[in-house]
Picture 1 (tube, rainbow, N blue to C red):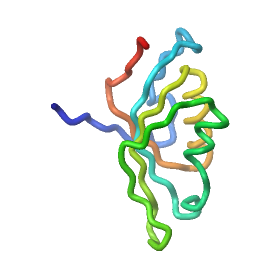
Picture 2 (picture 1 turned 30 degrees about the vertical axis):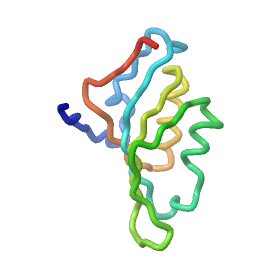
Picture 3 (picture 1 turned 45 degrees about the horizontal axis):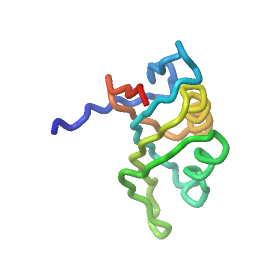
Picture 4 (picture 1 turned 90 degrees about the vertical axis):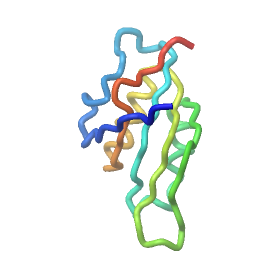
Length: 109
C-alpha cells in the first residue's frame, strides 16, 4: 500500500479543495492536525463531532498531558461537505495546523 502524500494547508482553506458542487453530499477526508499546547486540555475532537455533526475516527495520536509539546492527531472525518468545511474553518480560526492527503477526496457513500 502506498503511503499518502500530505500537504500542509497553511491556514488557507482553499488548499483543501473541498467539493462544493453538492454541499450536502456525504464525503470523507483524512487530515492530520497539530494541536497547540494551549489547546491540549480542550475537547477539540468532541466539538468536531457535536458541533459539526461529523463522524471522527482517530487513526493515530501523539498527545500527552505531562508533555510540554504540541499534540498531533491523524483523523478520518466523515460528514457532508458543508459541515466538514465549517469544522476546518473552526480549527483554522483556532490556529490549529492542518495537513491533508493530496488528491485523496473520497466521495460516494
